[in-house]
Length: 388
Image (cartoon, rainbow, N blue to C red; front, side):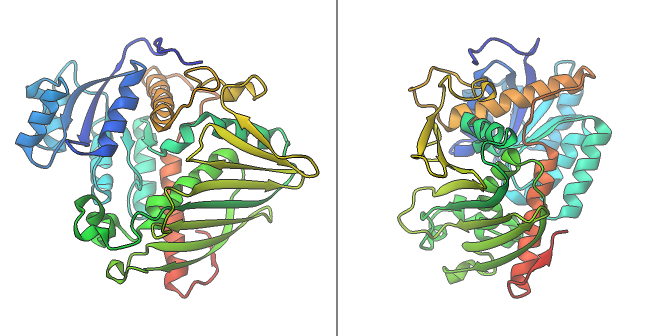
């Protein structure tokens, strides 16, 4: 159980790019990173408007001299300090992720980046190779994977409780953008602009979340080929999609589906993942993240609850309070930031980190690769394509 005691000797000196005043994602990065005393926020380039960013940083108790106008100035100035930043989180629009991540790695900084890591697989592999060459951590903020019941699902599958895996059914389908809300909402407007958002909207913004959950639960399941159909029901969003269906065939013969949508009218989040085996099935729903549904053929369905002794021990490690008390997204993100800190500390000490998974650079590469393959299939008439 996590109780806030240090798990690395000294907090990692940490900065942020983006995530300024009014940024929902910026707040969750800060709350999660700072919760377990693994990181110390000492610098930031929080806003495209330097004065607004400085005012915000001061209100976060950051030294005004370390509230910078842009990320390039911050990386250069911090590199000259004995107490300069060791890591940076990037919470900016998609189109900036590649250049900022690359600059951070060149500057010798560990990175936590919002997804997508970049727009093309070629760019993603370049960042992967740079991270390995520099011996640096790149974490990707797939925050839902920090929920403890994801680890329970992972162990159940690993230990054969479900039998042979046959079907993986995934979706992230909310309804909040079922009309053209971007006309009056700046935070949505850039998401439907290809120059800023990249080659997709909901495939990259939503679909990659349950896809990564499947990678955590089923690390050995590899995609062989896929077929994707995408639509722009709100026509002004074209060529970017607001709805997509993807069918995948895995190398072992199993099948998978992903429904990615922001026009599922009436749905809050609609993110679920169901793993179907030859003996049993499990299902997790992010609106009820403390439970995992477990269905054994021929027996009554069971609801497994977070924090209970009947779970695998690995699923109890990240508990922050006893069973029965609800934990949520902030706790899940905190669990990931705790893992990021351990990985960064191990890299800096030249140690090998064993038995700790986290959404790292390979997760970033695979997310970009999947979107690229989906777009290639959809734009060629929703045809089957070999996974490249």
